[in-house]
Image (cartoon, rainbow, N blue to C red; front, side, top):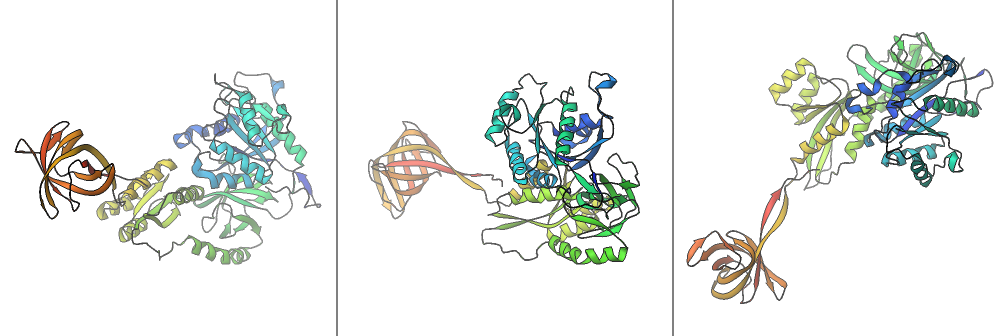
Length: 522
């Protein structure tokens, strides 16, 4: 989030800092927030991995209590608010992490003390440095026996993050989401950095901000998580994003409690938009529905065209097309799935997404899949009963998964059926030619001894002369002691009827092999 301290002289007031939590998957980002807000979000997430952006606000001093208890004097004064944006750590959510950081004032980089710097840690540090965000490092999992915080600090220095204890300016806190170690200290440092940044906003302006999550709720309709950047948002306000608009019907805080107003740096969930707004869109309040409609009308058409799949594809002679429909719970998940699909090689198989939407799987989705010979993939959504009946009748396959990389793997495996099988060469053995008997065009009869491995009837061979390949052929028939056999083994002598356009000579070596088809995967 851009600081507003320099923009407004009318009524600048301090606002809470917006803090983004970044770091590698499973390094304890959500668990740290879980300890802070005591809501067990980590346990509710599929696979223990955060699947979409969450925003939470706390008042330091009211919520925190040491895990082993503590005196009342240990608590900081109430009323100092901090807004946290929890971003997913799995590699598929790069775009979502980037979006989370762009609306923040301060970054907390979480690094596991027993693992150190990992791929997403490096990506997060690059993002923080690129955006110029003030950063605080939380060296987490200090309860682990293998914790090596000094090693982590040195690795951070190698990635351009120089902590205070090594002569830099980046503060570090040793934390444990299991025991609560360092959590109070982390919050105090966040508030100290926020004070130094002098974060202010005009509370009296028309409210504006950014969409940080959105979804189509089966009961409530279009819902969106908004972050208020400027002004005060009221429950009966009319809001317009870049692509949709509406009068707010419901406004709740992150705990699901109905609220009447939201001030700068506050995340709220609202209903009332005509359509689900894409994440990352900016929004603002408007004087009337008419003005809100006019503002979003042009942009809405652009967004609609952007989301409509291309009808014409340029397909090469060796390419095949795998049609798929994706339904997801929220736009952030849809964005992450789309980004991950782009990373799958498509030289042979084109992954054509003919529809990608938020919301449960409907009859229309199944009808489209049947007509386009597509498969449907649902990420943290359900299907309507009528859609299930229609899918069974029309033999439309629907796959579900609550974890993104499992769903992507399902798509890979399904699309891989269209790949041509791979051919692997299995060497069987070698035979030295001892005599040549008859040649009639390509059909030749020779005798020899197996020097290694074995020979099989039907196997192919390369002809080696003076260790250079001079031709190739196929074994048509094998004889051992004038009897037909299926194979000759090492040191056995026998006769061969072969098919080869290259005339065989005495002392040539036949290197025999078979080709096996192997299953390939994207």
